[in-house]
Each structure stands twice: as C-alpha cells, then as structure tokens.
Image 1 (cartoon, helix red, strand yellow):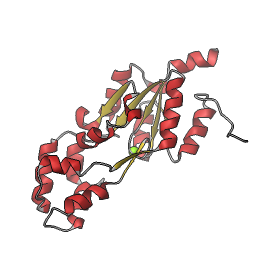
Image 2: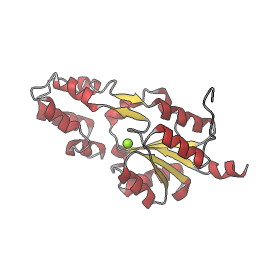
Image 3: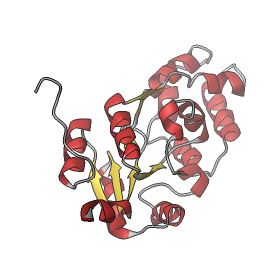
Image 4: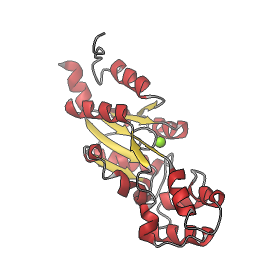
Amino acid sequence: MQMANTLTQKVVVFDLGKVLVDFDYSIAARRIAARSSKSMTSLVSFLSASSPLLVKYESGQVTREEFFQQVSKGTGYQGGIKEFSNCFNDVFFEIPAMVRLHSELRALGMATYILSNTNDLAIEHVNHMPFYRNFDGYVYSYEVGAMKPDARIYEALEKMCGRQGGDIIYLDDREENINGAEQRGWQAYLHETPEKTRAMFEQIGLIEGYSQPGA
Ligand SMILES: [Mg+2]
C-alpha cells in the first residue's frame, strides 16, 4: 500500500523521561539523605533538573565518579559509590500506555530510537526494563557531550538512523526540545498524555485506530 511505503521510510524517536519512563529522584534523595550529615534540601538541589552539577553530569563533563564525589562532599554522604548507585533502584517506572504504543509500532515494523538528556546512572537502571531493549538505537546526552536543545545531539541521532528532516517523527514532553527538533525540520510533537499521543499517531497514519473492547 502506498501509505505504508511512505511510512517505512520514517523513524519514530522517543524522548525517555516523562514520555516512556517516569522517575522520582526524591526517592533517591531520601535514601542518600538518610546516610548524610546535611538536610534533604541540599540533596534535592543536587538532583533537580536545574542543578548545575546534574547538567555537567548529563552533558558528559563529569563522570559518575566525579558526580558522586561532589554530592558526597556537598552533603556529607557516608556511603560508597556502589551504595550511592543503588539508591537509584526503583526510582524509574515504565509508563505502560506508552510502552504499549511503542510495541505496536514495532509490531508494524517501524524503526524506533531513544534520544535522551540523561546520565549513566539512570540508564543503568532503565536498561533492566524488558521493553527498553527493543529499539534500533539510543542517543544519550552524556555520551554525545551535548544536551537537547543543542543541535549536536539531534545531529547524532540523524547520523545514527540515517534519516533527516520530516522522515524523523519525534516525541518529547519539553517545549524547548521540540523547538530544537523543529529547527532541524523534524516532525516533532509535544507529548502531553498517552491518549493525545496515540490520537496523533492515528491521525498521521502511523497506527490504526482500534475500538475499545465492548465499544
Ligand atoms: Mg522528557
């Protein structure tokens, strides 16, 4: 069919956090705080999205070891790096409706990729999720050395998948990352809810609508 042929040229790229996987760093912060001399507040400031140290970690300017050292120094954390890493167990949760949507795309033979501002600690934990192995490729900010919306990380994805512009369908929950993708001519969509994203995929002909059981 004509439409199917056009669509097989395309790839679907997913942001990770708050799109496929939810996370709650405050769980890790509580565990770390329990072994630290300073309050929870100083920990949260290390782990929030605006934390300069976390940005350095996620843009590959500091390693996990250096991140760990600096958090320990700032909070008086008593544990070793292994225990510190384990504080991030069960902090990441699959978003079932999105995992299902992704598996539907795979069943249709679509190529799919991950494009994420992230760090090796997060990826070590997310890697264990069975759905996570079923992508064609993964582009991580800490490996590329640049974070969305920096053009370099979008370029890295283009190189990996061998596609450009409108052949790349992109989902992200952050406006600035969508803008970065649009500047490269990608077909980018702001992810708000799994329901809205599913409806959008149906609308552009990526998946067929299906009726609810009993409907
Ligand atoms: Mg996100």
